[in-house]
Image (tube, rainbow, N blue to C red; front, side, top):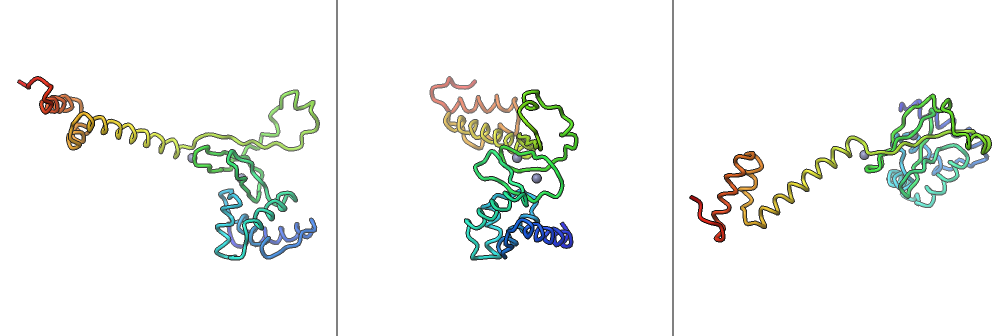
Length: 202
Ligand SMILES: [Zn+2]
Ligand SMILES: [Zn+2]
């Protein structure tokens, strides 16, 4: 976000605080400024870590209380997630959220037609619905890829251990891995020849 745009938001924030009867302290303003410039929906802890360099006296408690007050007055938005820590953001335009269960990344997405989706009857008879928000959960492509690579490493490690347990030198294992199935048969024979319980190779 450009500096001018951020400055504009800070002016709007100041006006909104005045209207809500909230005193605009230096710490409140800095917490808001940091959040307004963030795009990663930080938690209170993360905001505190980022701000402590600038405001060494800032306590974790002040960050919690400020975020609570600002979200109660609708000046910032609190996102409930699957983790124990809530995440926060300044909303510039309406959007929905996509959350990765693995890396906890929160991504914004637009769904303008969400208000046109018809709701189940029981919701319509419950009372007056005044807002709709959607949170979609899943595993992002990066995490999926990491998971696949880790699984491959674990399975390679397991194979390696099996070879070591059965007496094959690690170097042989590595050759087998790169040489393909024909080579594997050859190595298995050589390995058996080292085993006194195996019949001698012809
Ligand atoms: Zn992820
Ligand atoms: Zn968002």
